[in-house]
Image (cartoon, rainbow, N blue to C red; front, side, top):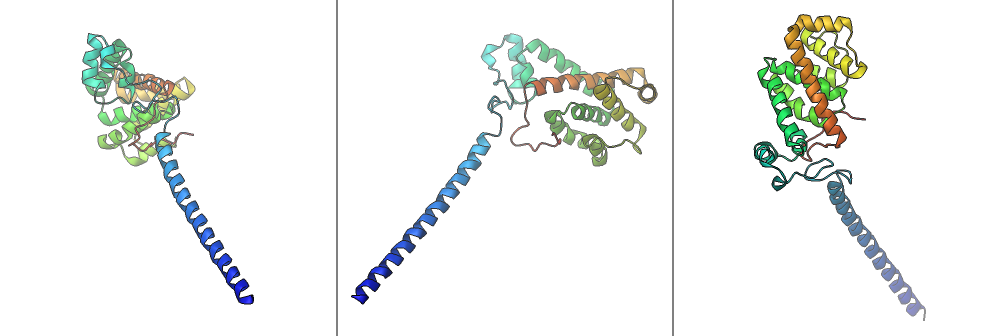
Length: 236
């Protein structure tokens, strides 16, 4: 009788151990599955609910067939290759897209401005507008144009301009004052004219205005950077 009771007890212990092992294994598999599912869901939920995956903003990609002839021409030259960014958003208003594209091309490439200073002015505007998309697109362009990482960090982290070359310091101060304070001090204005001349300064300020307009457009439609890009601007 004792042997029989011992055998029954042993079998119960073994059975309990096996069931516990299976439960733990099941939980591990469930955890792994849940983890994988969460990663997948996180990937799918990278954008807010009102943002389209194919554009990264609140507007779906423009359909070519919905455009007039002028719009189709712009679509073929600008919109087809990339549905992210201001060019794609402006295709909803082809006349605006054509006009703004022409202004941007002139100010960046045909106005006689130093490409390095063009990129600096754009980055200052992106920083003061908290426009992550423009900053992420133009930081690499700025470095390619010759902007040193330490100057980019002065703009990125709103550091002092003390010790910078005069033209760099003036562009940064000019952008900070006109966009943050909505007024440029007499000292900065005088330094800017002295550094760039009247026409050069008008072009620089117009370039900042062009990208301020772009930043407003992108921020209004909650434009996100491409999933393949790493955001480069620290936004709260």
